[in-house]
Length: 185
Image (cartoon, rainbow, N blue to C red; front, side, top):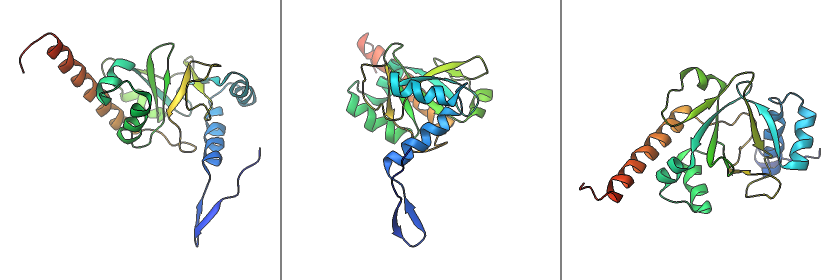
């Protein structure tokens, strides 16, 4: 694969292009596949590859209604802006077939994850369809796309930030349901 040449900004400081970071992230993600070369081919053909959770990363599945409640919107662009800030740039993709967001966290997250209404995917028999790093909007080839793309290899979400996001979403969802039922504040 061809890489763009890094850009020097100051002596000793290199800036890599977005495409370099995508390739690096995809190469790193492929380490979680049973066969990295097949994963690369699946991404090219289908936009999605099955990766094993718990090897290089753990994925936290969050129902879409919780994320929408936390963000206060279902608008795709507004969600992307909100999640980029809320997750401090940590990677997150949306799977429209399951109406869930998946946030990638360090593999150590699984041993301490206990957040209601979510699922932490980890273990040798847990696979997840992960979109290619270039799939950043709905794609006819697959149901998943990155809302907050990975910024580079091993650039994962802090589990405590994910916990905060889910807690906020659950509170906002409960508040909206209470208001809809006509209960007083």
